[in-house]
Length: 409
Ligand SMILES: Cc1cc2nc3c(=O)[nH]c(=O)nc-3n(C[C@H](O)[C@H](O)[C@H](O)COP(=O)(O)OP(=O)(O)OC[C@H]3O[C@@H](n4cnc5c(N)ncnc54)[C@H](O)[C@@H]3O)c2cc1C
Image 1 (cartoon, rainbow, N blue to C red):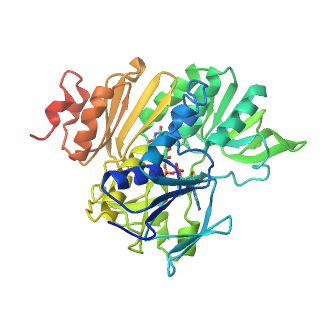
Image 2: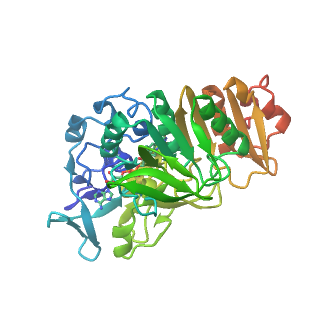
Image 3: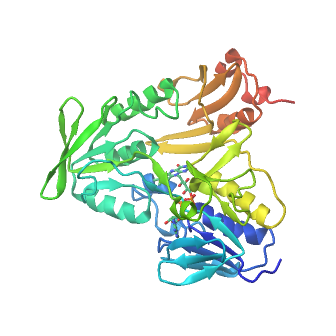
């Protein structure tokens, strides 16, 4: 294929970088330009709340590919460069530096921003968010002089930061508005397990606790006030309350947008020359029977291949089994499927041993699975969830029966 303008990818994160590489791998011969606001080479975000935050990984090790690999594949990097508008009629992008960039095919891989706390004081220098490498630099600087940390939000990122901060000797309190941590994504048994793990590590976990105000002194937050009036002091606050997808340029260009940029099963938006991928994209999923927007590396990587296949004229429908992982202390949690609407949870192994699985069933069908320090089981659990097997609870619960035995023949 030879084109004049080529493919332009907006967003040089996990998904954007993977699209660029997949296009070349799948035989795209036109020009490929990868444009990203951040000045860094495309990098992996998961270590930002894990090994990298803990000081156990270098910045270079985060890079998805070294610069030479992009050069070799003739992928042009335009980093530190923001796209401000899409002119669909002229097929060109407006850039923040006043220049324009034409495209034949456009891929939006714009990810999202950490959701801001909607309270006065939420922009104080010691109220921190975690999405980018630059955020980690700010967190490190604040952690270096802090004694007490409040983490607002008991989701994965909040809990991972809490674990690292405890490792660095901070006095940590996690404040979660819902009745349990990981409430949106995990069964009560899993939430109870992680609350216990954190408490044993010395973290104070406060659930059913809503932050109502940030108390400031000299421009810095010194305490939070929670519903009921209690005041909790902190040197630093980390907010982990989710992500807002970056959809503004898509919306302004008149593309269909809901919770994310709406795409079809081939990752095309409502304009057939524009695709969306990764955290910013909302796709229809046959397996789940509904649309969803996923925030995970596997989704960014696998959907990137779908986009490249569509652009290269070899469309492949995208109906993934979502999967994700989280590292806290010495625990590796791996999750497959979406547990929404489960009516039964079956445990295999004992949470007290820190080595177990939770299986989520709906009407006797396995819809999701979590594995804690049980990677071999997870491998089969993913396949079982994909196959939508009807699994007897007694078999799932019995560690002496290999999960492999449940796979359809
Ligand atoms: C701290 C942390 C821990 C995580 N841990 C895990 C984990 O353990 N497992 C897992 O599977 N996932 C994890 N994730 C999620 C995972 O990192 C994301 O799902 C993944 O990065 C999504 O990739 P993306 O390319 O869609 O978005 P991003 O990685 O956010 O990249 C989007 C890029 O687009 C740029 N951009 C946006 N708008 C424009 C514009 N107008 N012009 C130019 N550039 C633009 C942004 O600056 C950004 O660099 C974690 C995320 C974070 C933040």
